[in-house]
Length: 313
Image 1: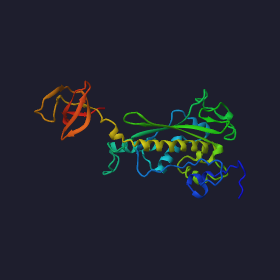
Image 2: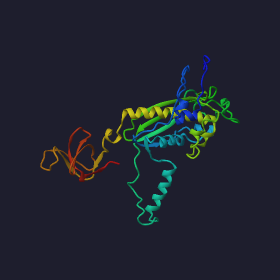
Image 3: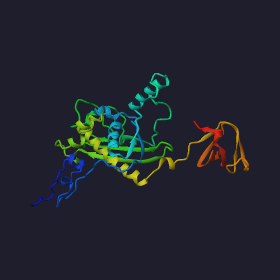
Image 4: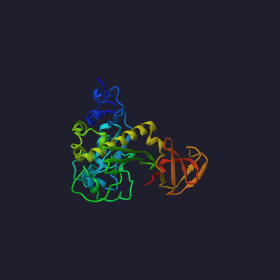
């Protein structure tokens, strides 16, 4: 079969995303392969993740849900992180805990303190600020085919004339507050096949509370931009292979009672220094029975009985 020079083959987005190889495989003679993106799947968890809503509520003027909802769908489908809820689910859980603390729940409910799983990472989805209008809320003036009936200025991160979206995902270590990864994603309407082919991929979004990203063109463009960023972020973090508990120092402790720091884990060992109540100490992670090896704010290092201190608050 003859191929017309310069002819571009458009592959429906659903086929790209569900990975149907017969359609996603480039044809011989194509001048340019179509960009293919799909939600990454991990064979083991990287860590525990909380998705945080960005400060700017830019999505409301686009009649979209918070991008927090969208990213949670990606995380759930990827199996790359254990997802903890710090939003509405957390609020509901706190109400149950209030009932438990007041004694209103049945005996044996096993609901109380010390049960909430810590988030190793915080993931914030946002848009890239590119212009002076990025902070404005009214964005309809240049929306073109995306929406109707709005009036205002352009939105930073979304090029309304060219129908593109530029977004960013920032992942932060909860314990150290170090920025573990930052990735940008870009998508444009012409990257996608808009003939209804996206139904297979976007079909589950409504059930996940992200129907706006399923049912609108701007929502689908923003979705693909975030998906590109998420793919790059997962690949970056997998290559880093972080271990947040091992990579971070142990939580500081404070002396609850007067005591001593010893050169060795033995009451007969040389005394390094006297410790007053309230003194801050930093565990090295090395332990021997009830003894913890610690350092103080002056750089002294030695052993202290764990019966004398509490975790710093």
